[in-house]
Image (cartoon, rainbow, N blue to C red; front, top):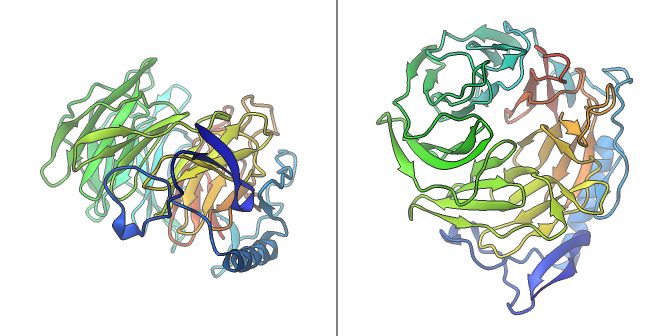
Length: 427
């Protein structure tokens, strides 16, 4: 029978009393299946030194620290000065700055990808209108350019990935609620589009998608109220699709998916599954601990899989879950200063996760439930800290990317207004 014990940093660990403790395998030794449990224990002196340095760094930046069981409220009122706490960037200084005006109407449900030089924004919807236009933002010049017209109908809730040379756009739904099954590829160098070959899938919105380095993998989605399990992979070089085995769980809506360098992980609420391309099979991941609830946001650090923003029963703040291959359980992370939220955006910087926007709780209360501020999570120290308030209003469903230096956010909605502005945060 599994039992609970306390891990380092006030982290609750679920372990099996019938299996020995296993240590983390080196990255190069990771297998193609999920098995075993890595140990997260550190030598006491090294752990203490690392925690001390992390604490000094976080306090120096924000004046606040959240770790282990410390729980302090995040200010989320909408009546404060929009620029309060914001530090406009000048010459690469840390803080927020606003983006130049975009040649696009306000929208939500659009996509954004980072090419290494530009943020590409495409599609989205506002009210009963769906957009088929897009624009590219160059942060070095703080300037936008319009994209060439796409061979696609206007849509929102589609997926987009960056292949290293092209942006692939697929699926989504139109203003009448009808879902799409087509897609197109955009080349930013030539500013031109081409239609993608037909996919062996039914029309859908909100599918999960990721670029593997060789293929676009598309899994699940919604057709009306039906949650789908069908999956397929698209080969860019050959402009051809192949069918994949159905996912062992329906994944749609606010589900999450990503590529970990060896497998595609699909996450939906308390359950997840991993697709192994070499074996062409899915494997069910273990459920979260019994007190876990809520979807959370999926993240791969290069070392472990995190589900952040998960609500745990009986706890007023969100926490998170972590596991690493080989896997047989989840670690519960320290609580965040952020209340349970949905429709927020999260990026991975290479060392920490940055959260911004989203709806706190489950009800929208005017002026107080969509924060301008955000939070950041450092998995090395299991510690959270606040991000200062942005110089733009809080919102849902914004496009968000990490450039290697900044978090860029653009567009989104507060369910009363669709925004056409954006901002950049440099940690």
